[in-house]
Amino acid sequence: MAFLAENYGIRHHWLVAKDLDHVSKQIIEALQTDGRRSYASVGKSVGLSEAAVRNRVQKLSDSGVLQIVAVTDPLQVGFARQAMIGIRCTGDSVVLADKLAEIDEIDYVVLTAGSFDIMIEVVCEDDDGLLELLNQKVRTQPGVTGTETLVYLKLVKQQYNWGTR
Image (cartoon, rainbow, N blue to C red; front, side, top):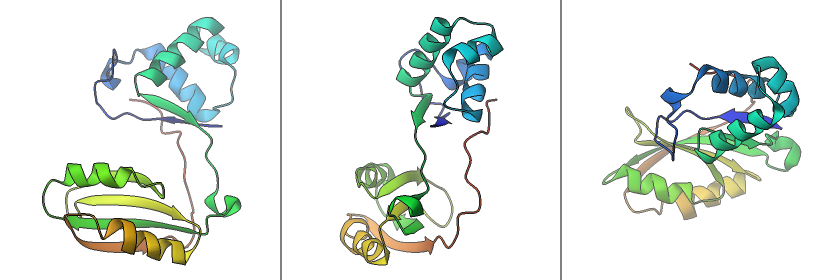
């Protein structure tokens, strides 16, 4: 299991990322290094009991600061085509981004400044799937004025252990 800590700066329930104390940051960093590490092991390294670590991880998860997921190599599980797609749009880009986020093949949606209004990352079974996604699900969205697709040839590095600030 890989551990993703996401710091959006958005207030969730009781916690804002900037409010993380030193111990919570140590827990996040320990799990980013090895997401399968036991709570007891993490507790020893940060000076808390297993139960206290479990409680903190649950609160961090519930608040949206982190999520625990299994990260796979798309090629090894049947997805031969990944791409980043830049989207230009008119109107409210937040509304469009929310609609795009509902599409299963899209795994990453970000609002940007610059040449594109929105960037999305897609994972498809093959080039036919990418073409269908572009033509039937992305370009047909109201407000989309243009797209540029950057097809991934080789994934050189992907990691989730950037730590905390």
